[in-house]
Each structure stands twice: as C-alpha cells, then as structure tokens.
Image 1 (cartoon, one colour):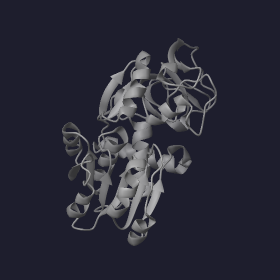
Image 2 (cartoon, rainbow, N blue to C red):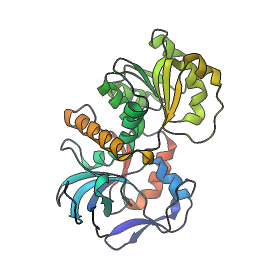
Image 3 (cartoon, rainbow, N blue to C red):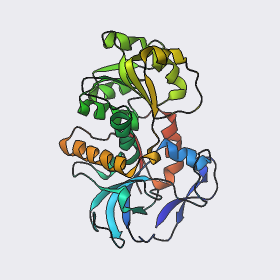
Length: 319
C-alpha cells in the first residue's frame, strides 16, 4: 500500500509517500480501506515534534478517516467486511489501509460521503464533548462559537443548534460569515472587529454568553471572560500559546473555564458522543462541510493549509 511515512520530526516536508506493507488486523482490530483521511491541527504538532505525546519513529500520521472494512480480527462483532465506517482514533489514516481497534470504528451514515466521514472523528467528537459533556449546555442558552468556519467551529454551530441553543458564530471574512449563517447561527460577528465581543451583550439582551466555545484561547480567553453570562462557561478547545486573564472577570460572573483534550475521553464518554452524533447525522441536523481536498502526496501542503485558518470546513486527504 501507499502511505505517508515520517522518519524524523520536523517541518511538513518530512512527510513522504512510501510503499509500506499492508497492515494485518489483530484480535479486536478492524482493517479499513481508507477513502478519505481527516487532517487536524494536532497532527501538525505531532509531526513537528512539539506535542506532549510523541510516537515512535517512523510513523504514519492520522487518526481520522473513512472507508470500507477490508477485514476484521478475531472477536470483532460490530462491523463486517464491506461496511462503510469512519474512524476516530485510528493508527495512521494517511494511508490506503489502516488498522484501528473496534472501539474506534463507527458506522458511517448513508447520508454522508467518505470525505464527510473523515471530518467526523476529531472535529465533531471534540465539539460534542465540549458542548454536551464539559459545558453541559442547555436548550435556550446563548452560545458563542469563535472561529465558526473551521472544522470544529462549524461542527459546534450545528451541534448547538441541534441542542436548541441560540448560537452566535464569529468569522473573519464575508464568505465565512455567509457560511456561518447557512449553518444556522442566530447571529454572526466579525472577529477581526476589535469590539466584536461587546456586541454579545446587545445580542443577548444584556445577559452575555452562557457558553463560549473557544478555539484560540491564547488570543481570546482574556476577552471572553467579561462577555460571559452569570454562571457562564468557557470551554477551551484550542490554544497556540499563553494568555493573560483577569480572574476578577470570572469571579464577578461566578463562571468557570473548562477544557477539552479528546484523548482524555472515557470509554463511556466516547460511546455517548458517537451515539449522539449518529442521531444528528441520521436526522440531518449535522452535516460536515468539506473545505479542501488533497492527495496523499500533497500532505505537506495540507498541513500548511490546516494552520492557515482561512479555510471553511474540513481539510481531507484522498488516497
């Protein structure tokens, strides 16, 4: 099979397409023929070597993907060869074939393409866990989603609306703001406007945001706290550095700051998350947006694109 292989940590150019032996599923494993693989910012940090968990070299990146089951190992009962599935937590999806434990393989809804399936694992699971498990958002609450055009942000808007929350999304371009409107947001703000968070109070009748889904905490967290409603919650999904905050802003609202790192999810949380997502895909309230497609050989360009932050939706590799 063809696969991306990383033999040293470094810039995107360290990712090379190589011929690799076809993987074999062990007991409890599923072998998936990958039709599309999701590209996530975390994979760029791992590839560069700037991540808390470093894989042994050489390795094939990627944990998200979608395709057909090619074979199953002993004891696998939930899927069979030929089934359409998506992966969340696979072992190297930047390849034509990938082995994953059965617990990381989920049925792909008929309504979704393989490319959309590759957009589910990290973005939708992260957004669902942030909103339902960490923030414990409730119908009727006001939810602010920063960076609502990206893979996690667009998922958060859809999940919030499906819950019954009133969603405010932010975007930095006219095209992006149109997308956020199409996703169903009740209001859209330009996050390039320095005073955009001041509009939150006006939009919410002076209350503030009950939930803020924060994708760039190093830029926004200090400004988020004054925009909270009493008892409001900020859920940090992403950050690229440090930030200074005034704890009094949090104290005045008796709010709280939560954080999400998907690999910390318990098996029960993972089960709940993907059951909830399955319901949303089935009834049409959730539908991943694909931004750009790259071939395996273009993986370095895909890593550069995912960090640029000006794409709308999910970036995927198509073997």
